[in-house]
Length: 151
Image (cartoon, rainbow, N blue to C red; front, side):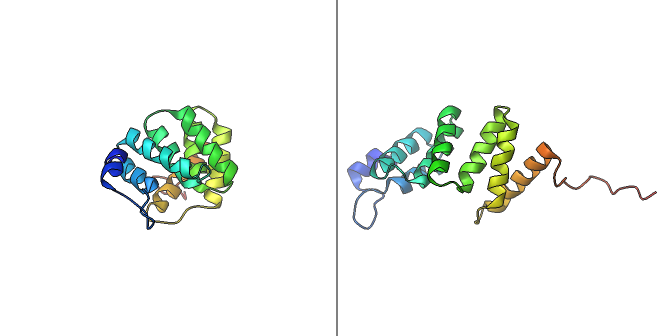
């Protein structure tokens, strides 16, 4: 459902009857309707410009559509407002890795792992962050494909 459809038909709304643009944006993101999701998130941000959940979701969308400069800016803004936001550390780490900023990426991976999220998908992200950090630093090496030779 698009923000326009919501405007016309009522669509997603909160208990006060006003549109719930954040919920709409997350639904559109799941449907990979990225530009529509951005529109909904921008409308949600107008209501609360410092909403870190909205800013984080916008960063995710910008990452998905390849607008990494904007994604980086938003992840950093989230961390200004909420320094321990694990999702922002995670997203920022992998964008920095793509840019070759390994030291900064390591710092953000460590920050993410220091306060990992909880939830359905959390284990998958935690495992990936640990593996990536191990590859970058040699810390916490992953298991070998074969047992060591005890000669």
